[in-house]
Length: 606
Ligand SMILES: [Zn+2]
Image 1 (cartoon, protein in one colour):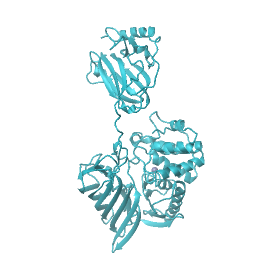
Image 2 (image 1 turned 45 degrees about the vertical axis):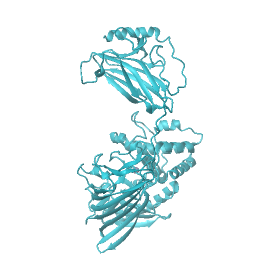
Image 3 (image 1 turned 90 degrees about the vertical axis):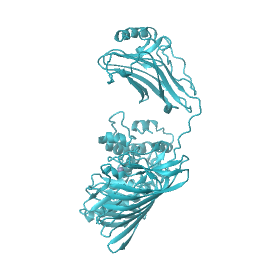
Image 4 (image 1 turned 30 degrees about the vertical axis):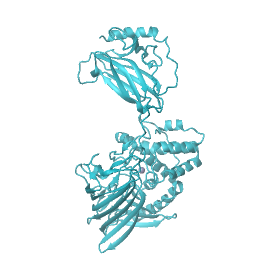
């Protein structure tokens, strides 16, 4: 095996006759067809593009696998990259798609552990296979990669060979094939979100300071999917605040199923049901629950005498066509993803503590003990607070009971101004997106929060802020009433809540420029991306996000935009929306204006 010299000689050979040959005419492929053009390199270079000089005639040292020609990437022994690519169209509806090729890798590298020289096979921007000097072999071996997920798409197939600064590696490639199967396609996974219609019943009693709660919780649910439901997952989100396995949320004595050990940093508990639930069958699980609120002015934390108790009640995770959603907690935003359900929560606590909560509350006092019963219908979560709050209340012109609870140190004038603002904002948002359905809205004010505010159904935590409060109240629609997967599509709630805040405040977002930090940065990226690029989260998902909606409004017109938001909210009321569904609704509202380039420039992908 020789390296550098051969490469140079064969470059010349390729240039002599490579360009004169043409690829066969393209035709629409059917299942069973091989879709790569000039896959054996016997017909010149087209339709391959890139380092076409690497398509060469074989020699005794570097022979072709079949025929007389091959692609010989690299072999220079210096820093060098060779790339070959072509566009391929995989027909839709086939049973499978498999990419195969023959590779012969020889190298001067002697390491047995370090990948100095690499070969990547990509479909679009996805790397579907990679090799290196460590995969050296004495002859050709066939590689095979399942590329079924690209069925129905036109994509770019790329092979890239990279060498570092010394010691050559030859990547000899030949006889590619990308063949689709003719059998029946596998049935698509049932994409129904399940379990559905959860009804939670909770009875908790607090200690004297309202920072420890113990009692019992149960939840009845139904399998909405045609696929059997053998288990459910409870999300114990606030265990992120502990030091797993030491946790602030303790679930014991599970009934109605068998609990597994906690997973996902103690935030998930699998409960295996006695027998799988068929579609439309219901089951109930129950457990003892204890909640220990940690120190800290947080969405789950105790600020002096005041406990904020968000995400403390275990809630059911969602399974859909892509399986169980068991994403990790994020402290940069939200991971919370649930279907709408009903809560009936009884809180027994000292009368000296007020307990603002999700839902509509009634209180019964017996001596120094008060029992607060809060009920809420069609909500995704339940949160409350406990402490000696100062409370002011009003009823909005549209009939929403609004309560503002303040920690000590917030003046009554601030509390009253936030009360007026909340009362106005809930009505104004309702005018734009649909009537607020929950009857009551509680806002808890604490200027020690490290975040601006935090949204829960019918309950928000907030600084004294004219901007944060209408934002959190807008979340009653965008996340609350119109649900979304907050971990995977955070823009669907944050961009919309910020846009709604601008509308409420009369901000038009004119001239808001977008400058993307990288090719990977997209408005529609998940929290996994933003957790790794946290300095860009607010700029993009809040700033560019609301700008995108302002720009969309400018493009399709004020009336079309207003109608879009109303009908989009209505069609997902108490449901879950996706980026694709919003894009479809926007395109319908845009009429003859094609939004394809708008989505591309604003990086709304999905
Ligand atoms: Zn928000």
